[in-house]
Length: 217
Image (cartoon, rainbow, N blue to C red; front, side, top):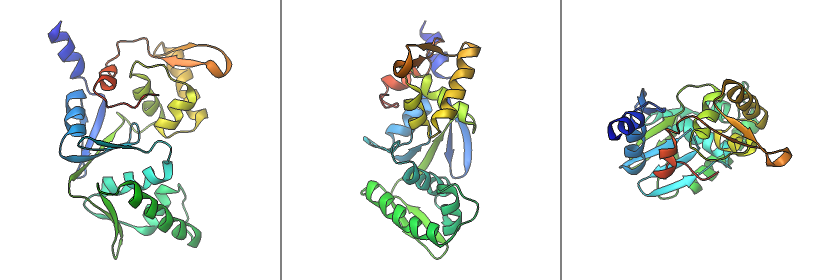
């Protein structure tokens, strides 16, 4: 039984990026990164971990988007227009975007106080951190994977809650859930506003909830 459990926990469930190098990560690797001496920017659930400190940012999508771009570029800098384009999801950056960027960077500086700081450079901005910076990414870049990894925690979720934590629209979350339900990867219960989704399969990532790596939905 212990061998089976260890094998289950050793299955890749996400990806870790460090210094531009991406590798698959099992729960042991995620736990080590979350509680270790690094600044972990978790793009699966939009949370920042720094040792025992965690900062949830699921309700601040733009601030988290800025942080994620800077974290993935660390220790390098990101040009201002590139940062604005990615954070605001636009192809053409104008004066209004640049002005908004300064405001949002200030907000990011506030939420990261004592952990890290976005610093202005000649090129743009870089993330200054006393800790090495790592990012935790979903197993793939598609939106369905963002929803699935949250649903796998063994908890009961609403479509809205999944969308919020995965950083996707509610409609995108509903499409992903419909696909999962059809494939047998999720079950749907309740009616109307009380509809909830759970995963009936072996809950590998439920250990993430027990380890404190997943915020309660």
